[in-house]
Amino acid sequence: MSDMSNKTMNRDSQKRHTFATRRTFLKKISMVAGGCAIGGSTGLVGSLFADRQTRDKPQKQPNVLFIPVDDLRTQLGCYGHSETLSPNIDRLANEGVVFERAYCQVPVCGASRASLMTGIRPHFQEGRFTRFNSRADNDTPEAVSLAKHFKQNGYYTISNGKVFHDPRDMADSWSEEIVLSRASGWDLTRNPAGSAEQDLWLDPKSNQYINPQTKRGPFFESADVPDEAYHDGKVAAKTIADLRRLKDKNQPFFLACGFFMPHLPWNAPKRYYDLYDPEKIDLADFRQQPHNLPPEVRNSGEIRRYGRVDEFGWPDSEKFHRQARHAYYACVSYVDALIGRILDELKALQLDRDTIVILWGDHGYHLGEYDFWGKHNTLNNALQVPLIVRAPGCSGDIRTDALVEFVDIYPSLCELAGLPLPDSHRLHGKSFVPLMDNPKKPWKEAVYSEWQNGSVVKTDRYIYTEWPSGSRMLFDHHTDPYETANIADEPENAEIIVHLRQMLKDLERCYHS
Image (tube, rainbow, N blue to C red; front, side, top):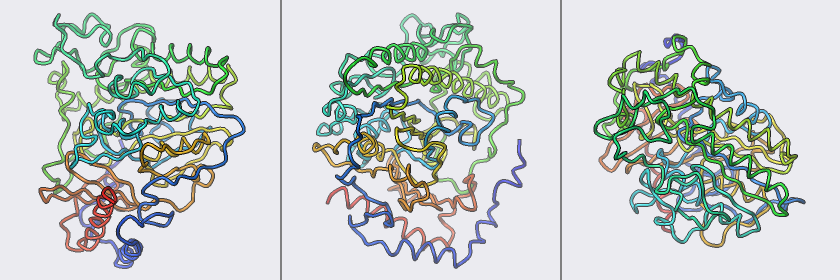
């Protein structure tokens, strides 16, 4: 583990911002007019709504392979985490574009997916996309989903695994009946038999560790079974079979393949656990709670719904940290192997040159930082996400640190496929396709997220959250990348907060314009 004295900034260093640097930042954002006229690449948020223009329609309509991965943070080799073994995702990254600073709109799966699939931001005050089981057809019935928009424009659409949180959500988006999804969504329900759910826990030993309150099995498992025994292996096999039959269809396809791992419980075939030596796994770099943390920012209790958590000493024992990180890494490597098989089949079928591949994790995740585990707060680890795109005609091995967000995916895929934007509703994002051609292009000044009435704005330098209670949280990512000290109450930051708050007010005002 690296020496944190060389990697983090103490509170005194927070005060060494130069007046000139602050003045530059304030001058830059003060140039932005209020209201909704804040578009353009040099504006504070870029285009708040997607332009209705698209690039010329491709000569051949490209296919789309759409790969959501649940609870996947940027814990991947291609994002600089060499300890995680993810060779197939890394290969995709080398062939496409890696968005190094992509952010989700809300750090919980149902709401995040509903927002992404409609291109509409969450809005907690209006009850839109607020919960883990939020449904787009309930919250935004006027919207046409991304998949349905492709379907309406001549695409054959298929959903495998976890795409929407609830497979009944906007079910008319798909050309075929959805299979390999839980009928009532991905909420783990109690098992009346009092044993671990059959399709999640495969090792008979897991039945010895049932949580008596929830009837769920242990938080990890490493059964000695083939890859196809677990649910994600079945999803990959079905996706490969679909590719083979779609090849001969005289119709472009939008094939969604959603993986459940590395969501809890961290269950994967034993071979993927064996890739790692648990004694050599690094612990999180910074485990102390950030100074002056607001009460609204808490650890997630999700993992406590599983068995064996107390046995390993959740949340702060070294034993628990090593076991949990080992399990998470194993599940990432398992999904990586499955993604590799799908990409190999795409190439074997000679579909790779005509197919857009987009891989994303639905929100961030804490892996022991601050002794936090899971999502469910507005710290950077819960909001930053992996996003990788490979597209026909676009160069590979490209990285961009431009700020992008999940509402940008809908208009971006439309532009890459040469489709018009939907007439049903206004998209809240901006196509990032220009970044795929020019990764250094001046881009959005900010992206936005929400969680439990907390409103977040992330700029190049700062990330700021405020709550109706009056709580505030500010981190300077240039001097404090590990978010060790909330500096919202420092007097020298008062003017910065005024401008960041105005950015949030401008966004709110645009919702009602």
